[in-house]
Image (cartoon, rainbow, N blue to C red):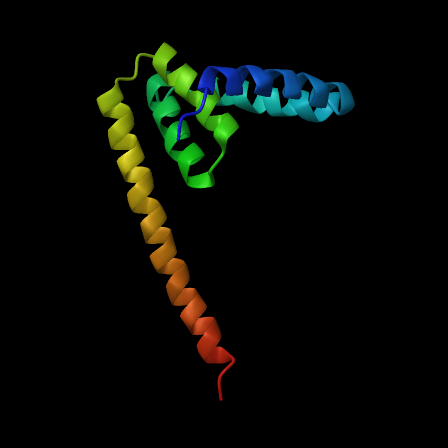
Length: 113
């Protein structure tokens, strides 16, 4: 299960450039959204990157993992901090599966006799 994450990030950049050539206004809006998030003042950039990594894992976004792993390193996040954030993501994913399991059971029951 070895992946070249720096290469993934490099390829994402190239693919993003191609997408920007096709839909420049949408990509610019996306970039502006990310820039606005970075400008917020209540959370520091390291905390935002740790949150981003947790979200990237729960959404299974490999491009996000590569981008935010690099950004978390740059922001000074430690491996221990990242591991703890990933633990929270794991707990939430399990929690989400629990909550949606109750919904699935409810749906099943509503279609019964």
